[in-house]
Structure formats: structure tokens, C-alpha cells
Length: 112
Image 1 (cartoon, rainbow, N blue to C red):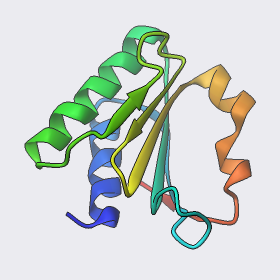
Image 2: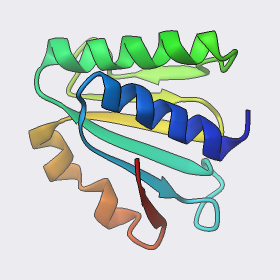
Image 3: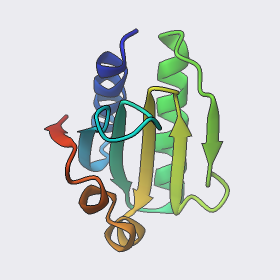
């Protein structure tokens, strides 16, 4: 599956599970880290873990394997690495504090 399709699928999964303020940022021209960031907010630790679990399950169904996940235990900021796509699921307060959208503002912002 191509990176843009992976990012869109992840955003759709997050939207279906009621994640808040979902953004897709194309960072392909800005970094070698990935092609896309998908950023979303959850409302609680339980909600953030559920969002992360759902993304992982749905992507496995698509044969897209999770390479690495960080922050799951504290669930304030869960990072999921799919190689060409990196998913950030934040608690709302932490998202505001770290403000990745500002840091990567040169990337083309795409709404889910």
C-alpha cells in the first residue's frame, strides 16, 4: 500500500473511533523520517490506548505492519511507526504543548 493510502486509511480509522482534530501532514519533502505524519487527539488514557489498538488492528488487516510503538503505557502521546507513515495520538493538553503542526508547518496539511 502506498504511503498516502496508508495515511488516509489510518485517518479514517481514527475518525471512525471518534478521535479529535485529525490531521495528515505531508513531510516527504522536509524529512527522511517518513512521508506522512497523522496526528490526532484522544480524550483520556483509555481512549488513546483504544485508538492506538484500533489503528494497529485495522492496519494488520491491510497487511501493514507496525514497526515500533512508543508511549503506550502512559498513553499521553503514543507514537506508531509504519515506516513511511508515523502516527501521533496525543492527549489534548500534550498535543497543544508539543504543537507538532507548528513544527512541521512547512508540510502540506491535508484534512482527513
